[in-house]
Length: 118
Image (cartoon, rainbow, N blue to C red; front, side, top):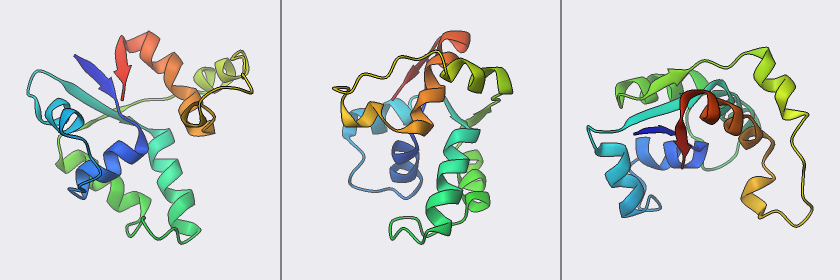
């Protein structure tokens, strides 16, 4: 199965954090799954690192290197994916995790690649 990973899942995986659930760990480690990261993940790390967020102790460049070393694949994002974000309806009562602007690119890449977001 194809999975497009959330930034926090990737952070927890590459740092071997106990915050990563056993289920997520099994998905990431299964040879039957393809794990993808995108420009949005790298960009989010760059912003958080530049703001000196305490849980981001590595640069965006190092983050990408760690994703590659972990065997994750880069999922290319194009301008038309950003254009499609404007078509998303934003519900005020959406769960907090669905209000993250970086996550708003995921639905279009998921549909295009038949991936599951985690």
